Length: 260
Image (cartoon, rainbow, N blue to C red; front, side, top):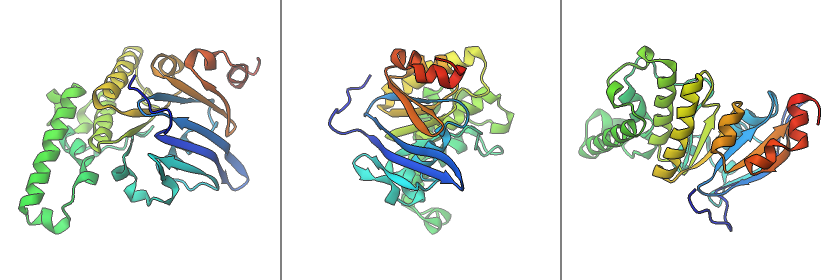
């Protein structure tokens, strides 16, 4: 694991609460994510995991609490600036441009790092052309890392589901994030693909020096790759710690099995 700066977490969630009418989705959740860590966020359906992800990526507003990213108050950042700030995300349901090629989909992810506007791109001004070339070069490098070079020119709709998952990961990485949010990356994958995914997440973390926060129901995957695990139930944090500790925590056992 990359050495973490103990004095300054990359992500700090403090007393976050979210209500949807009379439903309490999150109720005073707090935890830190240190630089370079892979942190697993687990819990039964309805525990509040995706709601928390949506707060960190600014899709949802918090009713209470604070979220700090890289020393900055995240909740004051406009939604459209989150990617440029250094937060990348994949989604539980694929959100790819299905009629576009793999390469073009990944290049879209680099958009938040470009400075050319509509007219500069339309008129093919020199700095816009240079930016496009840099985006294409970066995209091809990511395709090589994720073993997608052979399908660079293929339309996404023609690819198997597992391959599409890697395309979405590549697109998230194209934004050059410091923090990568993975929302159920193993959903829909077979046993062999899940094993390869775990190796890939670790490889990406080391090669690109990322911090990863993932929501995942596949417990073996979470416990095998995470440095730290946070468990939620009914919108509250019920446990956190090293994977081996959290796996045996009575509150987590009760949450999944209904008994301690």
